[in-house]
Length: 470
Image (cartoon, rainbow, N blue to C red; front, top):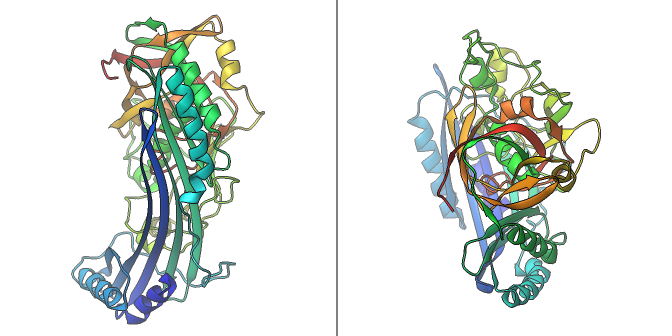
């Protein structure tokens, strides 16, 4: 039975005042390797429905949300009743909004869900085997994981809306290590179909980083001129995007709230929209149609996420959105409920994020290294956590590659550090912006892999303490 049939059965079975059904049918293929040998491979198939049952009452609208794997009509009926029971017992939802009405679009609702299988990794596996041989000869070790997922996403509502989107998503995570494990490097890549993954190029880059690490240099904590390649910029900008809630800003709870002299919220209910965040003409935006990073052009959400996303918005169109342009904060993420309450336009969360210098292409990371008299090349961040939401101060560790650059060349690997930085402050302090390229955040790439970022040069990146982590 097609998932669309199960979805229609769920809508028809609903006795709630309103009903939203989100369907997901996913297939995945993966490879894992360690010590220059494949260890596992797998192929998976899953199908689940999320039922949102809404009930209108004198005090507002309540909702019951239940997600479960389903395969039969009886399981669908059981899920609908569980959602209705949860909704009837719930209090009014403060993110409640009218269920999205039907509108014109070009989706082919009845088409078979797109699927992937292990064949998508065939060429990649062949290239990986060749690299295993080469790395054995060089007495070095490769570890890593690759997966490709095709997720068919469906939204159906009791108001007649039927939308669907097939989302391809692939990631590659590779660690290279010396035989004694004293040296380590990391490279990650996002892909839609693995046709653009060059395993030999990944191996060559890891070789280069292990060669750099032949010399170990111990440095104390302090502020260092630092080149952040696109992947580490993605680590921090993804977090800045996840916290860009208009509601949180207007309630004085995030870095985008209007500020007092002490850089905290001034309690006015205002935001920093319109304020210059960077001296560079930076453009931070989301665009569901961005080539190579396409994502659903409508909301697909199975759980309300604070002021960022609401299950009531399922099916709402997601247009391209400018968050920063010409270096100024232009907008924040706003659910339909919050937009209605504040008299503003909804600004939905989108599943990709792009940062560009709008003046020109900018230099490559190699060109930025060549122009550095003395500084750090920071290739990988790890275990990033929030310290202060009102300044968006983040802390985390460096890992698998911090290098010292002197007179335009990498001269050795440096010990790891704990860092303390705010991505919003970094935008204001950056002295150079590099060329934007597709980049995978190591820390958050599992959750938001569709990112394109430039490298940044930070004159005084705060390495707060030396870390013994490896």
